[in-house]
Image (tube, rainbow, N blue to C red; front, side, top):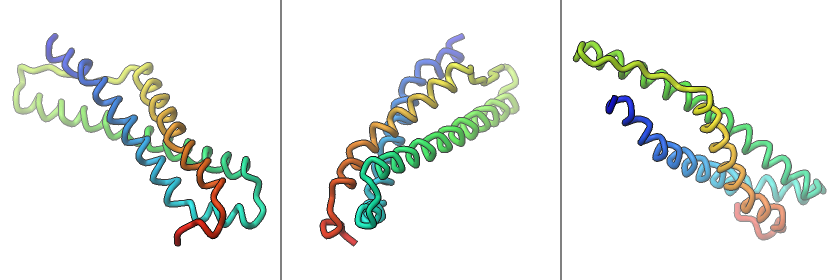
Length: 134
């Protein structure tokens, strides 16, 4: 039972890493797109539309990244448990992911991505074209 409780204890640390990585990725995406966003502003696109575009893009990237991470994590843990069973037949570990854990990971990733992109998106919609670095 202690072997099975170990991943549950570390799940909080995993969720914290997911939140931090998602926040950093979202912030980096917005900062790197600031020139394009400034060009849209110069071309007359409304600021609220630019903000909506940035938010939609970030949520889409975060959602797809979370799905990919969940799939790779599940496949990796199943592979590791199979290898462990080959090397030590007495150990019986069957990894599984509960639906509420998948939902929790997706919500955490989306929330941290949205929070990560709000400030840079607002900043980029307020900046004038001449203020942007090339």
